[in-house]
Length: 285
Image (tube, rainbow, N blue to C red):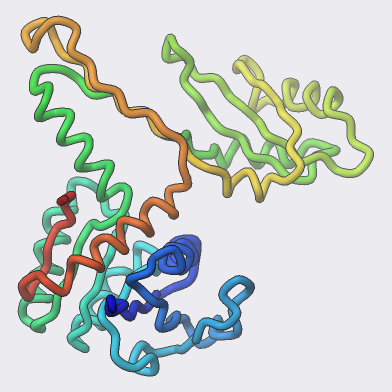
């Protein structure tokens, strides 16, 4: 009979909820409970209403691994607190690329000194996507990489669209077209009785959008739109010196939190067999 890992989820935002869902998919893991701040420590919503919620990890009893799912700015402090208790941890904090090596080295050293185990950068990015990018560069060493993510919302343009009469909610994004020119897309949740054509005309006339290529779309819920799957396109194009027409392409649509959670569980599965200290996540068979 397979012994199931007892896992704790520390933090219960989008990543924490995704981890809880991913644990439910696994036959070799169980969710011991969720650790939350005292002001958020009430009963969880379905389908997690039977999961134990505590304010301190010690209240969950013996654990194999704690999955750190708090906001990025809090990860370092929370990770150190857990390591101080000699718990094994997995984290995937979004750290600026230029600061990652220093961050990982410091946390790995702390894990070693506390005789704990930590898997670092075990998510989507940093994590699997970072490794895929390096793989592409290894296979085509001479060339350029083109990476396109789902564009971030423009707060200024979103606010301008939300101020238009008849708009209940809005989300303005920028997408580069094939020539690199910025194309603006505005998604609006219409107020009751509002007409899309009137709202579109008002947005086009707003100083924030004048002179820009803008398309307006009505959506049932802006909040739901923000939760939708993200997209990624990674292309590695070789130069003439690298070989004729060498190109590698990765394209996909997915929920970032779901993929990150599955990577964290893969890291948790492997972590107990590793030596004391911090380890950068890698893909293995």
